[in-house]
Amino acid sequence: MTDSLNTADGALPAAPNSGARAQPFTIAGTVIDPGASATIAIPVSNTATGLPASLYVRVLHGARPGPCIFVSAAIHGDEIIGTAVIQRLLAKLDAASMAGTVLFLPVVNIFGFQAHSRYLPDRRDLNRSFPGSARGSLAAQLAAKFLKEVICHCTLGIDIHSAAVHRYNLPQIRIAPDNENLRELAMLFGAHAVIESPLRPGSLRDIARGEGVDMLLMEAGEALRFDELSVRCGVNGVLNVMAHLKMIQPHPEATQVTIPARSRRAIWVRAPRGGLCMLQQKSGDAVKKGEVIGRVAGIFGDDAQEFRAPIDGIIIGHAVLPVVNQGDALVHIAEVMRFGDVEERVDQITEALLNDRLLDEDELI
Image 1 (spheres, rainbow, N blue to C red):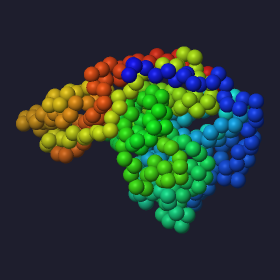
Image 2: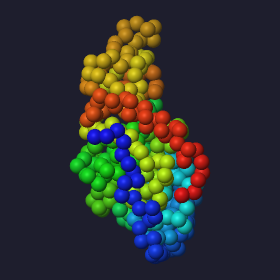
Image 3: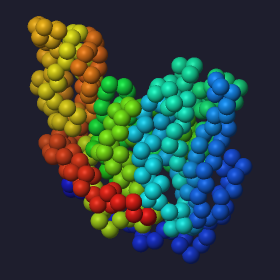
Image 4: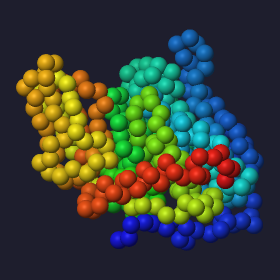
């Protein structure tokens, strides 16, 4: 296997059916002409004040025929990194020069977003509430609207998450196991790691698969925080996928993608005692089985207990809060298929993202 993938291989210089014009696109009763964009408010319920609460979708309907995909963020209301990703994508994309259609949902869980909370007001997790119900809980009603008005229009979804509160995730793509099409898209996305993980019942990925919709799930950064590396990775990844699907032209300076770390198994290392945690490794670092990755000591610095890597792999997530209880998840390690140069490849991806001129400018695509 080589150290890079050529994303331009097989890509046409223009979108497919470049001589044809797309048909109008209809969502939630609103018709959008080819080459146009629109913001659609899909009613969900009322807030506790009695004011309307809606699911907001920005639709970019390309001038030429092509696939329909969605990009969603903040299904967990405090996981806002995808909101920043979508903002930057909207500044770059031009429906008039596109093929196909993209549905952007920068804040799916508007209730949790406003409250800085992962959950809805009823403490339900939206990402465990699919397929939902029009007469169920608030979470169920929101899930049902999302399924009917968004997912069922599409053939591919990209859902963006971050780590839970007080944790950080290395930018990574999670996909369903044994899906060659998703594996190809995940590799081309350009994140630091690709994790094949089982689908959880009631999740967006699970219900989308039942509707025949492939899903890429991006994990990156921290809850309630923006970081430049995560945002750039998300923007670059979505553009890579769109170019591969021939919705936009590939950027001539962004044709090489370093092969990410690939894994089918990841393990959390937990605190051996309560106290103050000092990590010696961080996300992106390669570790060997038995290597000390940190220690936890009491408030006087006494009785420190080390914790070690249980496998050879790469750290894909870590706790950022030093105050821990016994059993708290501290370091997430993925067992990778190609261990020898994995840290070097991760560093190459980071450097490429932070130095990519296309991601520095609001250049229309």
